[in-house]
Amino acid sequence: MKIPKFLFKSFRTKVAKLPNIDDYLDAPAGVWCLGYIPSNLKFQVGAQLRYDSKQMLPFSEAFLREVVKDDEGFQRAKFALQLFIYFADQIIGGKSSGPIGPVDPWCMVLCISRDLEVNASAHLTSDGDAATVVITINAGVFVTLAHRLLAMFADESFMQNLGVAPIRKSGSTTKKTPDDGSWCAQMPNNANLQMVAAWTTALAAIQVLQHELAHFFRGHLALILARNPQRPEDCKLLEIDNELRPPLIDPDTRRCLELDADEAAGTTYATVMRIFDHPVPGPEDGKIERFYVLTILAAVSTFIIFEEGSPSRNYYPPAWRVHQFFGSFINEFFSQALDDNDDNATWKILEDVMSHVEARYSDLNWGDGFDLQAASASTNELLSKDLPKRVALAKDFSQYMPHICAPELGRRY
Image 1 (cartoon, helix red, strand yellow):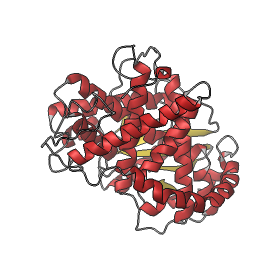
Image 2: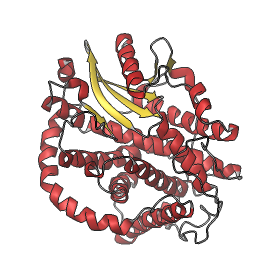
Image 3: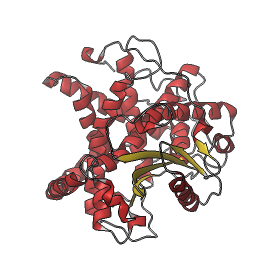
């Protein structure tokens, strides 16, 4: 695939010493937690995570070692998680720095759950004067992403020419869900490709974090709480809904909120990655090209794994969600507006990468692939249906954005 010249630039990336996973483990409170949170609230969050995951112990490096039994696979998954923690620490405001961007008077906290289901969530809580948004990402997100991306890169021709989808069958299939000892069952022999897969896993996890934070920054969480003051404990946006509890919002509203979060996540992801100087492995030459392509690979992989376990009524098709994320990403990514040729080139890259991933999924016998044409057909109808609701909702939740809404809303707990 020919990359347009406007993508070629040199950036310098400096990644300091990676954090230890267990630096954020609070064993007495029973929670893995990054960011500020009062002690008694930390105990409450830990208890809720244990209840939700049906696991008595918190997430830790030892748990990761339990589920990723292959030593080489464990090292790749651990490295990807450490990369994610390094960036998340600065986004959320953990041990090393404050959060990126003002969110006073709110606090932000990231928890990793021991749950192996692919899921993530965001909710508001408070303790006295501290109003906190709690983001939870299940361990299943990391291990499933690592498992799939390593398997995809195991065909070492996968990255050689993204403009030409693989047409042969490798004959080395693996499960889509990493269970029964199949964690990281396939991986490339090439150490450089292993590194690329690990970095793509970390970038995908950052995109998940940005999506969850978008629910907070865009006022979705406070809006739901304001509409359901009698059920504050249920005012949590799960990416895969809990069917055991009645939904707090109707599917049409939820779908609009998810689309809005996808668009906002593309913007904030581009912003924070600029602050981090667009980090990717490899030489300086062509670095921005690699970051651009790995961002798309990460987005495609992320939306696929969440869509597979989510009710479709709450979300647009994954191919369209990638378009929404990518559209806002490129608007923020480039310092000036693109002309028509460059704009067309950016979308051509997206569609080439998506087609390539779809072909690799087929090669691995992972379902029906990533059908862009089918998604477009159903999406146009949904967009026209949802437009009036999106306009009305935007007016509603704009008053609940964190720089406007004070912690009083959280004190209703």
